[in-house]
Image 1 (tube, rainbow, N blue to C red):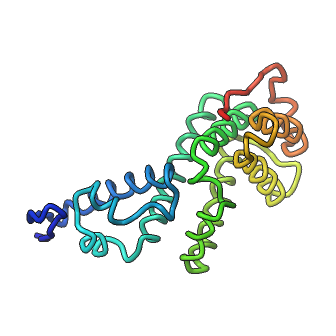
Image 2: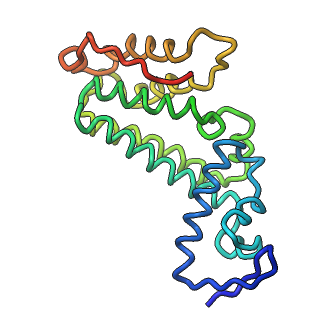
Image 3: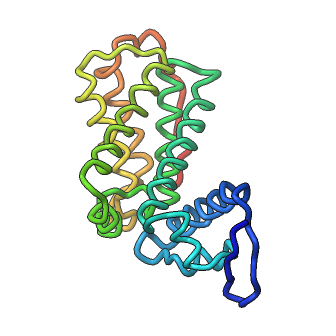
Length: 218
């Protein structure tokens, strides 16, 4: 039995079996706050109040705020994988790949504080991490891309590293300021359509040229 004291000064009892659920609630609250406020403005006090535990007890579950954020990143990446898999499950090949890319782009546009890796807030988070954790994040991104290629049943014309860089660059257009540029959704789809045949060896035979994918949100 773990005895803690909440903010209302009423004693609360948690067992070891409660810990996985408490950590899940913290991850969900953290993800929502990260999407709306960003890393810097997401405070431990706010998260613990929402979950109903003390700040002291939080540090029994996590060594630091950054450790929680790393778990949240892993959770979100798994959610993105599920989104990708659901989009290509019934439509593998180039068209499914393009639809899945649009799904990712739409997520990036909806939640820029979470997915815009070039913003100062995200850089502040990275500065708190040891180098091996940052490298692990990069490797996980590459594994996501490799898994996406495998599930889409596509062969590359170019080096895998180059293709990975191109698709990352395409997704970064989600961070463009909508007030300063032409419709970034149209720009994304134009660049995707323009490059897809040069990236995949079997794109011409599998793609439906009459399909118009343009459902992302600005």
